[in-house]
Image (cartoon, rainbow, N blue to C red; front, side, top):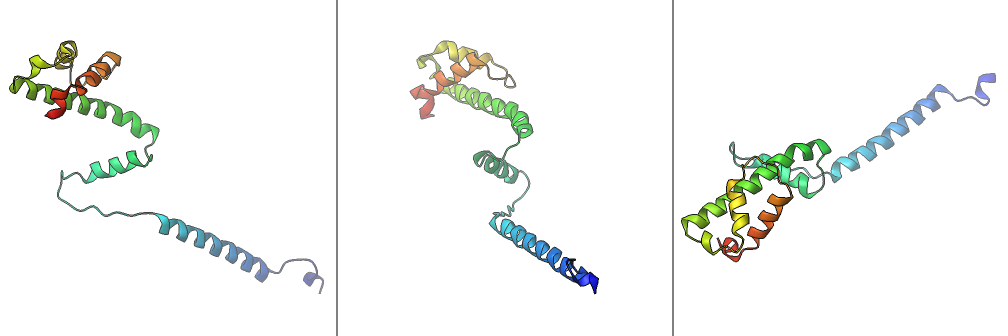
Amino acid sequence: MGSCLGTQTPITAAVEISAKIDNQNVVDIRREQEKVKLLLLGPGESGKSTICKQLKVLHGMLSEDDKRLLTPVICQNIISSMRTLLQICEERNLHHSLNDQDSYELLKSTDEYAPIDSSIGRAIKSLWAEPKLREL
């Protein structure tokens, strides 16, 4: 008789634990339903991973490690793309009409894997403002 007064029965404790688990399950299910899942299909080297990386960048989901690892790749892509544009300028004999010949020479001589420092950054910005390059 004394055990009924003021103490919780094992059944009541089990019901409370079950209710907490059920509530947590509801929260977890709602959280899962809010996630957007995307299935990317395609052959190898078709850009599936690139799209995932771009989504992470656009939606601020990159970790500091990801940023640290991607920075050199982004720098390489920028320099490589600018050098490709400069090469096309040469092929079309437009490079003499560029306003900033110093930036042109600097980027032509810059290694593709070089980090972008302030001088290279200024050169890229200056050349990107060139109407002849923008038309390519």
